[in-house]
Amino acid sequence: MIENHKNNKHPKVLLAIFALGMITDSFNRIHNYLRISLTDRCNLRCFYCMPEEGVDLIEKAHIMTLEEIVGIVKVYQKLGVDTVRLTGGEPLVRKNVDFLVKELAALGLTLKLTTNGILLDKYLDLFEEIGLKKINISLDSLDKNKAAFITKRDYFDRIMQNIDLALDKGMDVKLNIVIIKGVNDVELLDFIRLTQKQKITVKFIEFMPFKGNQWDWSKGVSQQEILDKAQQEFGALEVLDNPKHSTSVNFKIKNALGSFGIISTITHPFCSECNRIRLTADGKMKNCLFANKEVDILTAYRKGEGIEDLILESIKQKKYSRDGMELKMDAKKYENNRSMISIGG
Ligand code: SAM
Ligand code: SF4
Image (tube, rainbow, N blue to C red):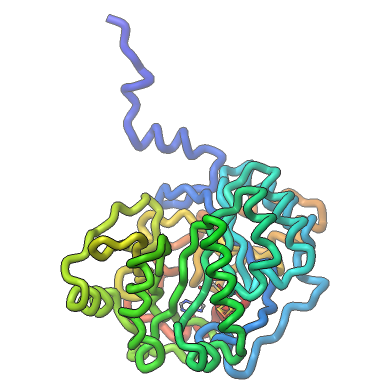
């Protein structure tokens, strides 16, 4: 009898063969999703993201040029990255972002964007043209005054108009809401009601700790609290299937066109299937959002040195969950990380 050796290989061996040359960590997680911060500048000042006293901005000379971003992304792509999310700071304040988006789209990558929405109208036609459909927009309040309190700027009307424009264009819009006790938790049900008549996704994000954001979990609202409130108001929730690498658990209320999800980094971390890596605006690779250790990709790239080994070595150092932080988050650790505005969420 002729044996089919191909099919007899142990699944672990098959995985190892498949993962060869890909960005694989010591837990066999393959990393195909790169989140790039285009800038640490922003036109808002959300208090949970940017410290009260501001941040030391990265010197322009140390920020990756758009050409450097394209060159570095090509290397990541060679190592198996197929999805890139542009973020920041506010990615759309970056000059000539349209050039970058076109170049990255031409590489055949799936492109996604996280934005505060202020400048979105300028780019929607381009995004439609190149097929960038998945847009996450931060909107922490449906109340103009409260939004101004949270963001310290008054752009609410413009953001709301741009959300409508994006929906009219058929974009896949997700609203990101960092839910904080005594600030916007009273709006939880109003946000979910938005999904009743619109094909929109609302994502509640548990408040996370970063340098200088005065984090304290007593200000946070947990996944369970959100679900309890939603069920009390809307009855049984439909639990939606989660794509493998999803960072959120997702639900639908009865007869709704849209859905809502919860990104529960604090109370239910989703690290086991993590496929994400980050590149800061100054070209440092972070193998985890909470990793203090960064690998300087840009300097090596500028010197003309190969960066593949640096990338692969960095991923080997990745810890299983939240860079080793226990459930009780360790202030000594996150205060040594960057502020969220200069990481790229
Ligand atoms: N400026 C863009 C925006 O606001 O969408 C992109 C950058 S922002 C850092 C990316 C995401 O991180 C936003 O959805 C924001 O709400 C989230 N974020 C910032 N600080 C956070 C924190 N402390 N906890 C949870 N999410 C946070
Ligand atoms: Fe700017 Fe986004 Fe941070 Fe708000 S959450 S300060 S919009 S980077």
